[in-house]
Image (cartoon, protein in one colour):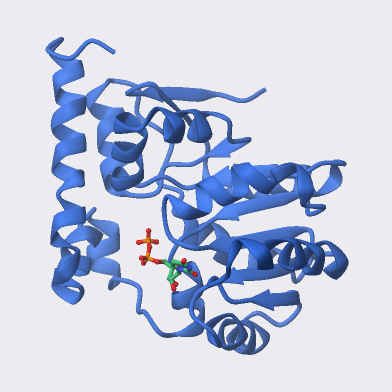
Length: 246
Ligand code: UDP
């Protein structure tokens, strides 16, 4: 039975990392594709301000709290999620688990060459993990059917979709029933991290809910987008004190 926590009209799974990994194995055993999204505060704010995005997030088969902002929001509302399950950490745990219980991955997204670089690093860092296909994330509408065909012919179980938000959530939602994989994960910048092009924030920042600060320092041009984080927290505070009615 799925246990969810409602945050500003969006139903986040109250789930630990280990449970999330197990759920993906359950999806792999099933006969259909499942969507998994990993909203951070920015994506939550997109869901709050865009009805279609909210519906897409709520249609997910698993929606995990990626980021300290979402965990904090759950606490403000007195419903505290079990733990942060970031997209990158979820993928990392799946790669580790797949050495004992095999999973076939397809890597989709990033600039040309990035998915191949990620694959090369996976071969070195996660012996046992199997990547059965790669495709960069830049394509025209006309190219989509051949991308889907390639994914379907690869025999992949898990599709990593790294097109950035909200593009990846819309893409997965639109193509869910055409894809023969068992789980499609919208995991943003994960491909760049796997490829070694983008570094994860040091542990101090990751463990203290300050990943956003590190990102702002490394990528200051994100400033405008990142304003969604304080906006999200203020919105949730508004709900908490009764100023905002959902
Ligand atoms: N990306 C892509 N296709 C696109 C747009 C973006 O493959 O049409 C990739 C981009 O190369 C990057 C990833 O999506 O590897 C995440 O992009 P970004 O950091 O902008 O998004 P975020 O994950 O922060 O939402």
